[in-house]
Image 1 (cartoon, rainbow, N blue to C red):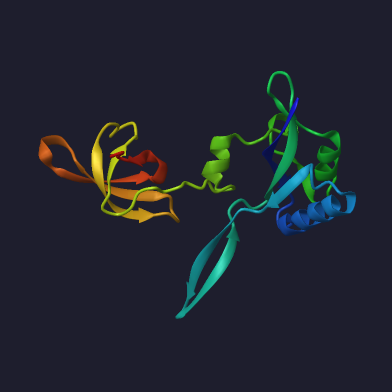
Image 2: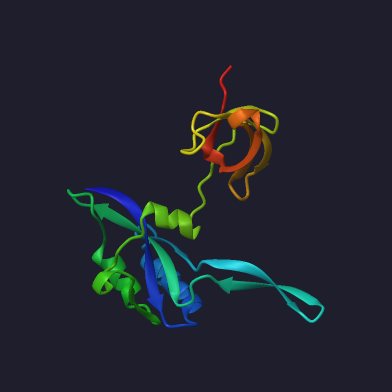
Amino acid sequence: MSVNSRWYVVHTYSGYENKVKTNIEKVVENRGMQDQILEVKIPTETVTEIVGEKRREVERKLFPGYVLVKVAVLLDDDDRPAMSDEAWFVIRNTRGVTGFVGPDSKALPLSEEEVIKLGVEKRSVEVNYAVGDTVNIIDEIFDGFTGTVEEIDVENNLVRVSVSALFGKETKVELELDQVEPIEE
């Protein structure tokens, strides 16, 4: 068995998300379980509200009633992740928690794709090209085409490339940072 970690979704009473997060973190600290329960997050977004002529930034929960918990898991012989009974018990019996999200309320971890789509963990992409560089596109649609980098937006994981496509017509394409690679000279 090897040790790994996975994100789980915990359902809470509405409005108890912050309290649940705080309580889980306190129990982890008090019981010395930092090696089992690694991180607790409440996905939020910052929204600008305009009321009358006043603007203010407000942080809103993306998924009210849910908290994400990163737990160390053991992979069994079939590569199925399973958290320890102690970690399950601590999370499940935290005040305000109604259960785990999964079939029959069994703890089911999020897949890597779900973690990325939810923005729980940011993938860091090393950009080894710059504006003006010629790059190869390694995306399904434009795979094999080359283009010139026009703009790089690391914060949003995007690169804008000008591609000389069909009939020599320039086409601007927006791709993710890891969908292009510099041409080796």
